[in-house]
Length: 145
Image (tube, rainbow, N blue to C red):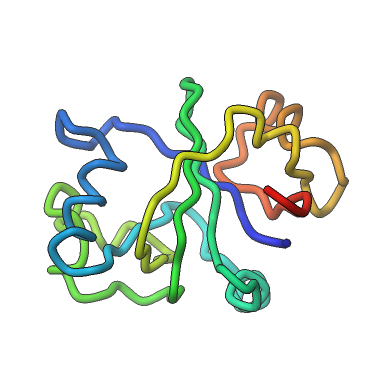
């Protein structure tokens, strides 16, 4: 399966944290928009993700050990309706270049990074994420993960 891995932090999140703040909106609306700072995700990468039987992206908590699968049903590069974005970053929505409509989060296995490989080099994500400042990676995930 080809998808992307994104780093995230709780720098701007409320005390409950990024994931929990997003889950609150999922519980209320059935979905939430998750924004990606920096460069846009290309149309090809977006299409590749959505071709998966169960589209998802991997979220890596920077400087922590938490990893989450975010199951998505849509991607876009335009700012979505603000009521689908957690309140704490609605006023910064224009800073985000790609958006993923998440329908649920699931904690990923602790060893997930060793089962993901950077598409361009086939280097294990566990090594690449430690030695790169890149905010995201296009990855191939081993079957069964």
